[in-house]
Image (tube, rainbow, N blue to C red; front, side):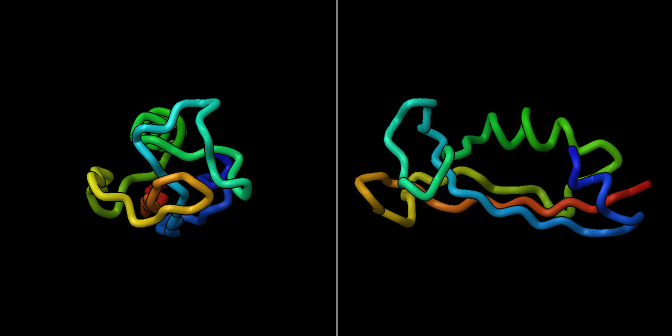
Length: 86
């Protein structure tokens, strides 16, 4: 993951993305988004590629009541905070 290579040791990255755990490629999404992210994306695509980084806190991505209804799509934000360890 390029983010890890840009951080110095002890550096922090905070990522926020548009999120819906129900999203599947091809589903409707706001026009401003390339995609919505799911827990699987965050765990398998982002965290798995974050070598030499650790989570600062355990994320809570379960969201039974999404925050937004925009352009016909119900979604929320998901965040994660990483720290480079070496």
